[in-house]
Image 1 (spheres, rainbow, N blue to C red):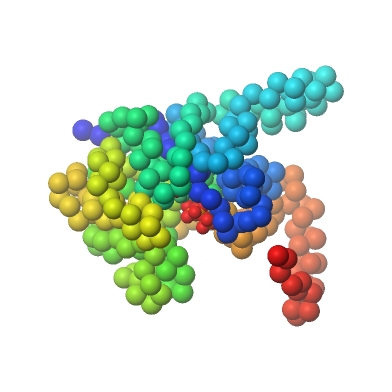
Image 2: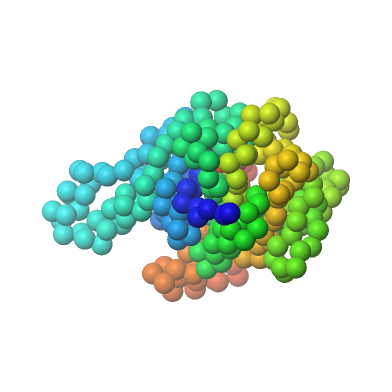
Length: 307
Ligand code: UTP
C-alpha cells in the first residue's frame, strides 16, 4: 500500500565547475535568480507539494546554504529597529519555510552517491529528490503530479522533458512505452549522457524524482559509471530492468517551464523570464528589455571571454 510522502532530499554538493569563478567560494545553488537564491525556489516547490521535511546534501562552502535557511538575529534586529518590516518578512520567510536538515557528502562522487547519503534520514519510506540547481516554474506544478502518480502506481517516478536531439548527450535519456495516461510513460531503459547521435529517444530525465527506499540498496551496488561518478541514472536503469526492485520506473512527461540554473545560458534565461513576469519588476523591466532587444541587430558588441 502506498504511503504518504513527507520527505524531500535536495542534493547541493556538486562542484559547479560550469559557473567558476562565481562558485569558487559559494555553492551554485546560492546564485541569485532575480532576488532569491536558486535553492529557495526549490525548497518552496517541495513545501508547495506538501513536503516540509527537507534534507540538504551539502559539500564544500555549505555555510552560505545553512545560513540562508537559519535565523540571522543581527539582520532581523536592524530591520526591526529601522521599521523595514517588508524586508524583515523576506528574511524570516526562508527561516520558517521548512524543517531543513543537512548532511555532508564529503567527496562529490556523483548524484547517486549524494542521494545515498540520505539513507539514514529517509528510512523506509518513498521520498522525493529535487536537484538544487533545477527550477520548475511554480505555475507548472510538476512535483505534485509526480507524487500523485507514485501514490497511484507505487513505483519509482522520474520527470521527463522532451529535448532537442542536439542536446540529448547532456542528459540521462529514457526509452519508454505509453501507458493509459497521457502524461505517464513506463520506462524500459535509461542511459546516462549517451554519445552524440546515439540517444535512444529525446526524452531527458530532469531534476525531479520520487524514489522508493530500495534505491539505497541499488545505489550501494552501483559501480562508478560516466565520469567515474556513481550515477543515479545507472541505479534507475537497474530498477527499470530488474523485476526484483518493486515495479520498475515510470516517467511523468513535463510540458511546463524549467530552468537549469547550473548552466550559464539557462541561468540568464531564467532571470529574464522570471523578472519579466514579476508584478513588482516586470512593468519596468519589459519595456527596457524590448528596447534592448531591438538593438541586437549584429554581433559587434560581443566582448572577448574573461579569463
Ligand atoms: P551537476 O552535474 O549539474 O553538478 O549535478 P556539478 O557537478 O556541480 O556541475 P558542473 O558540471 O561541475 O558545473 C546535478 C545536481 O547534483 C548535485 C549538484 O549539486 C546538482 O544539484 N550533485 C552532483 C551532488 O550533490 N553531488 C555530486 O557529487 C554531484
